[in-house]
Length: 158
Image: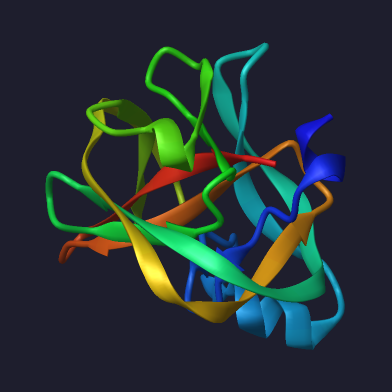
């Protein structure tokens, strides 16, 4: 399995779409206990809450994945992302790919964002950075863009 072969880290400021409140992955790591976060059930085509936690911190070179709305994700190059068609792609291979999106309302309701989020640029970061790994679920919703009434993001596969 890919997860056992390489470190799959997310930048410390990556925001996890939580149920009670959103939380950075660094704060999740420091908390040392799981939180309820949104994930996507690919068998039932629905969003659901699952416990997620972070128990591992590493340092590595990362890649900045920029989307067409200028939001971005900084993660390890081999981080798996869920494409709009529910297939998996690695961050380093995601140029011009539509990544599965979601929209979270102020009422903590989450829904599919039909257009997906197109990757327009990949940029390897020059320095080695602190990053954190998620565990405890098969995928997780992360937030990389905000609007006044809804929060939008993408689905990661872990």
